Image (cartoon, rainbow, N blue to C red):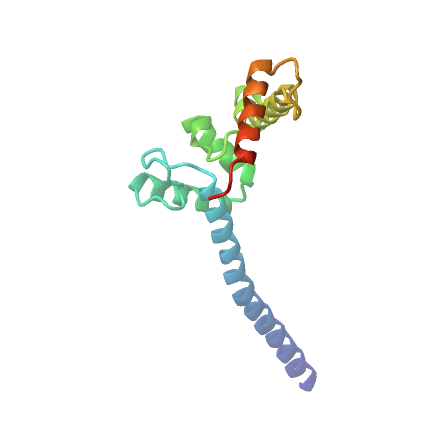
Length: 162
């Protein structure tokens, strides 16, 4: 009899450990699903509210979309499958960031091209600019002007300081 009681106690302890483990794992899994649902919702724009993600939108449609995301995560669908589900229904405009392919690649590349072109233009413009010479050649100065300056200088030097 002792053997049966010992065996029953072990089975009961094992079940208790399993139930306790599930109680601990279940909230962690629920937290993980909520976190993943929030990340996915942040990647989607609300079709009604301009400039707000599905995660931040107070609209009824965004609430329904968040619920669909949670349901799909609980059903075991991947991140990419859920995103594709919404793209299929709403088009690529539903994405917060445009995909980096096709025509939208210009949205990603053009700012860099513009900065490079601006810098290249500034370098070209600065290196092409003429620098004024520091010394004026005597050919450029009018001899009458120089004579007048010399005469004035002599006149001022000879005057007494007042």
